[in-house]
Length: 412
Image (cartoon, rainbow, N blue to C red; front, top):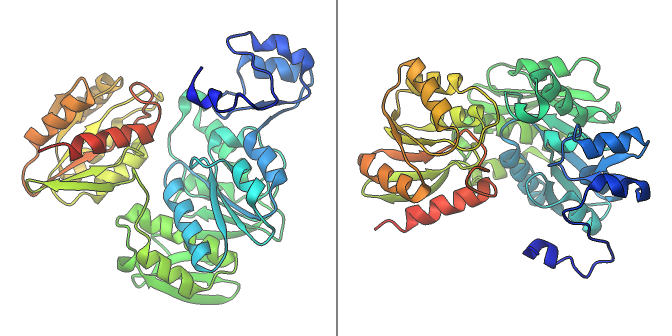
């Protein structure tokens, strides 16, 4: 029995491990599934055929919560933005629980929350498949790019599931959308909440945008500058977008711009997202294990400002790597690519098709780190940003990142 199950052994529940779950449906009033269980799996379909309601932890937790619920989803930037937003609420004097897909269950936060507290929820597409009454007063979709097609099959399905975050909103609520993303822009049609856009490239009628190099908020007939884009502590154009979204969500919740400004200037980011590990022999090592899809890794590549050895590869999400291969060439900063993981053949094929040939292979992470040390030049970088999930070698991206950091820190 695993440690996780052993710790729950005293709870008043039955255990049926390794059994056919369908046999238990006759005794079941409601089927509460993990986000890891697809809604088209046999047990879920059998429950629906019997008229048994199917729900998830996020849905149940939101019904139990007393605090004010704000939530966001998207393909990339969720964890950084929800963490930034939580810091903004705390700086404004609120108790804020950052929960959901970030790793701390919303149900745990719900049991502690009071009506005056903030529940800041990161939501995945898997969680949104089982929501019905989930109702964030401020909700956002950050971006939509190809991901999880092994689960959702098509981009149309994936996009539709993401849009569910707005389903229960009404006229008193706020829907925050990325104007620069065509898929997000299309979501606005038919929404009942007040729409606030955010854009890095143009001014919007209502929302957050960059004006004369400054993050600016325009909301309810008022326009207020927040801070310069170059003052945002976490670097990169993708983090400008994250800052715009968080600023708009906080401002729509009543947080003053002075508080937002302070946090944007001081928030240092999250673990495993372009996280600086160490500098050794003039080479800077970065852990971007949270780069679990192509678009996320493209954004990491775009932040590099020196010749970089890029580590790619992991488990397969059935997503093509052609766009990443093109960006590697266009960026001009990727000196070599080291492939490690189940998707290495697919990535190598995409790189070669794009005309990129500076490719090396490693069979394990210890071998990979040693190889990168030999390949990297003083003044350059090593960047782990796999563009893939971690399940071929690790339990999750966090374990992958921790192993990478340990190996790097052990280098003499």
